[in-house]
Length: 289
Length: 296
Image: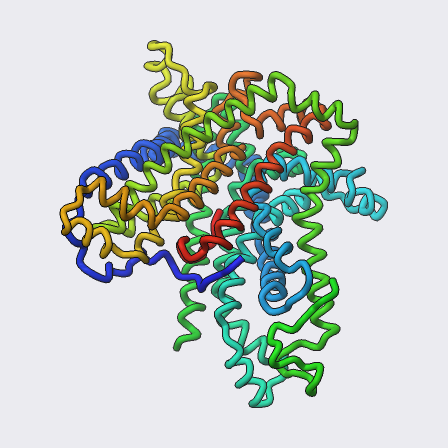
């Protein structure tokens, strides 16, 4: 698989290179875009916010004070955090090995990285449960040591680590590819050890990419449903994730409650991702100063 | 894993003294072994376990499970929903890319962010929003009931949720590519008197066809595999509103493990086919695709 340098989506903030010419179709194309976007995405999402607003202050206090809601949100965010952290570390290492070393089967392993993107989440869910349950392929070796993975919060983190891994490899890989050897050569010729070079020369440009991977894996993990519900065990206040609580509230026709949990989840993710984005910008800037 | 060569053959350290840009061999090999073992156990094992569990009771049970009438109707529904979603989102993606990359107007950045929005929404929430609109107690629920229109717990709801989830796929493959390509060719054709549609069909479409195919591929794979959003709006009515992933869930929750894994192998094959086609497109037509970004 070839990886050209990553560029942000060019349309973001970059002014068009030249003045657009007299091409036809703007009203039709833009009109269709706005109508579809409005009907499919914006209208339904505003229905969510409106529904959450109907709860009023009293209803919101009830939701916020509900220990089951609190536990579910805490579980979703903490397991997503742990899984994203694991993915960031192992993902950077995998990216390093895939970019810098040549070995038989490298292309195969490189292709394998994308599998969690392609595999439907429900399939991942039952497969991971089959692996990590007490008599599963991996679980049976852990049970004698008293380690339980399936039907515990650890199982949730395992599932989230699976779905998040490609983000953390694919964000770091292109950056590593564009890092020429000249800086490392310079560092080595100045007498830096390999470890110092890694820490002082290679790590600074890699950190922003690792943080991007972390954010993507984390965001995906917070909202993930299909791969988690089979392995989680879904015990209220122990292994019940926030998305599942939304489904349960919906099944009880508690639309407002479901919307409240969903709004809380979206709001918290939004704030955290904003913070991560700011940190990422700071890191990316810091090395040009 | 024999046959290893160095990343920089010219700097091969075996003949000279140890290359300062290369980790010592023992470290290199332990890193390779650790990472590939991790990758194999995280990604490859789940794939293998699906196949093994599906065939645990032999080919006959496997064949029965995947030819079951409920499974067959799930396959039909999955293909129908994917076909509609791909058609809708391809039309949208082309329109959005044309508007965004060929013209200047204020608010472009906001528009791009909004198009990407469905990627940052939990699948469950993607289903929830349509229940809030069209569900029995939703905003339009009473009106729909009075007119005998079924959206939630019926095919239209499944289509809507899937369209929402796969909304950005085609657009975000086309927009960066068309941005890179610019509008010179279209403007030349247009100044030579070509009609708008002709310009699109004869100039733009040949330029973007591989990226379009790439977007369609990712869109259809996700549409067929979507679980969370569809699960919320489907109602899980056997033979009627079950897609393949939901069929897997139902069988699994009924403790029909072998059947669940058998149906899951169909989705695994789909995932592998997607990966192979994706790799082929990247390998064969990589230069005709937008520069790599992380794709969902």
